[in-house]
Image 1 (cartoon, rainbow over the protein chains, first blue to last red):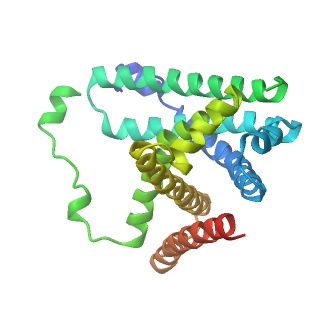
Image 2 (cartoon, chains in turn purple, yellow; image 1 turned 135 degrees about the vertical axis):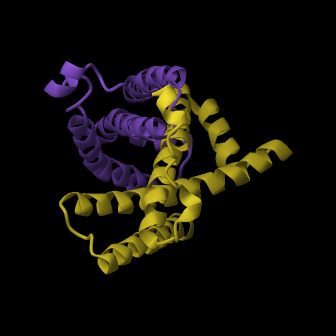
Length: 127
Length: 141
């Protein structure tokens, strides 16, 4: 990240003033995970068995499948924000930064899309 | 930045500081968060994808991660799978506890040395206990 032009620095433009949104988004998605992940863990722990029929029937119900879709959106978003901060601390080369920028803006989206499609298949499919 | 960096001193890193609870849980927050991001979300997608693909794919998933039948390779991965699952559970509880600690610090509380160290240690104790209780419940009930 450069320091911008002189006049840009004076005006506080460039990349400045974007950190607060990233910070808040991280906290907001953390609150989401605080609800969603315990729901997932308690649901899994309370299942009588973990064979295909039991788990599939659970995941196909409206509230669990809604929760699972939200898990896909919220965990990947929260992870994307956190991994970005980690990489910003450790990747210093310009080429590395471009690669990191590409990765954190594509892979989490791809992962979440795969997860959501899977949950929709479970919820609507006949398997 | 490139030419400036070579002539500037690097800030001291892990090895020069005296270890304390706050430093430990701060590092653990990052380690567990990234572990959950890469290992946890990977496993989550494998699980959900297998569940969406049908009984055969799901039983394969169960066998690789937990049951470990049909050869020495699944046997080994099933042991690793159990270690990873328990590890992820601990990582979640640790990351959750240190995350809640961050919420408290965010509002400006808990910076007194003694309170800061105490709450740092409490996150460690909580994560260990919660992991043990969770798996005791799952395996013993």
